[in-house]
Amino acid sequence: MENELQSKEWLLDPQAEYRFELDPGTSVAIKLLKGNAEMFGFELLRGQTYLFGAECKAAVFTWQGCLIEVFGRPSTEYVSEETPMNAYGNLHIAFEQMRVRAKERFKTSKNNPAILNSPPERQSEIPRILVVGPENAGKTSLVKTLVNYTTRAGQGWTPLLVNLDPAEGGWAAPGAIGVAPISTPIPTCSPSNVLGTASTSAPTVLSSNALLPLGYWYGHAEVSRNPLLLEQLINNLGENVKQRQKNDELGSIAGIIVDTPSAFGGGPASTNVMRQRLIKTTIDAFKINVILVVGHEKLNVEMQRTYGSQITVVKVPKSGGVVELDLGYRDRVHAHQLHTYFYGQVIPPPAGVPEGSYSNDTFADNVLSPSSTVCGFEDLNIWRIGAPAMAPSDALPVGAKRAVSETQPDRVDPAKPGSGLLNAVLAIMSPPVNGDEEEILDRTVIGFVVVTRIDLVARKMTVLSPNQGSIAGKTAIVGSYEWQDQ
Image (cartoon, rainbow, N blue to C red; front, side, top):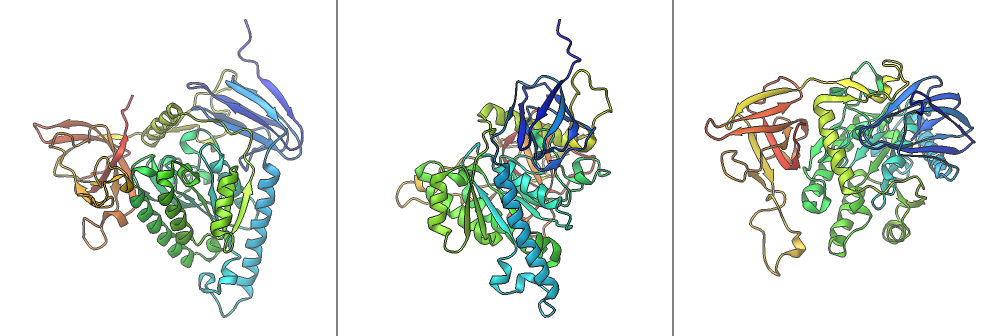
């Protein structure tokens, strides 16, 4: 019988990478023995063991060569010498030069203390980057690498990372979009925390967990479900970013990197107008001055033709290690994200790796204790934005108008049949500024709960929440996400 305690060593030549994919229920541990290596820009420490699980698909890259030890059995593992890392490195150098020039001009400009109020030619020095591409192109990997390189530059940069892909969820739950200032490199552990973990969901003793994101609730995985709602939320997010930049000069110089959903990169012809509108909204909201097109010639031509005269458009090669992801995988990732939000994440080490011998920087051992609370139907104000299911606007008959607007809040009564609340994910919203309950589109998310039981006779429902705090009097929005605790 083969000894499962044995590990395997991989010797990587300079500018090569070790790629691996995991099946459900499996994990691997990787230790750097010699040389230098990184994972999506996150530097691995020599002699440290890192855990990966939950169907993680990742790669260890080395610029100068290294020796790594791998415990466990990935479903796929191989070494490739064809990587896009040279192109990614060159992009980082170009953006770093922009930041340094902007910082020098800021220091010497005594009469102009706010960069955002400076002339357009000076503002253009600050990198504000939009990454677009089709599905399974590696956009998030590129975004993560650029952000990690920026935080490792030794200049004290705190770039703003914007996630506009509701299917990814960023630092919240799937269905949310948001932004977070990144001051330390983001590690990789599993698909459930691909952009890092918020300080409210992980031990804050680790600097890599100290993320304080700001999020808005879209509530659906597909951009086509309610594009007008997403457009409004992007504008709201842009206003928040603009305000933060006014109050954070160094963060402003570090710039913005915007990750986008695959719907921005293409789709059915019927959605083309709305797709272009969402791209234009994003460019205006974040004052984008660089567009990176990942692995798509037609999209690159479109961006060059539409924005090339005002914005720098760069085509970036797609990595050969990008994995084609199916709907089943995405559903499992969403379920794992929600489970991680409430219960934390524990990745069991593979055979041969003792408990406690691996790095906690990968969030591999993080246990949370949620709480079940019973509340009355009247205790929680629940809304739905638009109708439960809406056809695209261009699919309506000629001259027809909607009875319910895509961005109109509609009150949900838990007592009515078909409320759709059982097992639904609810986003708890921040308190209204002026006491107007219907101004909920402009309010940010402060947390999530799941409705686990509805008692129509007693007019009560049971909700699972991350803590024991009361939700009475809170306002919540329901989307199309459901989750059952298993």
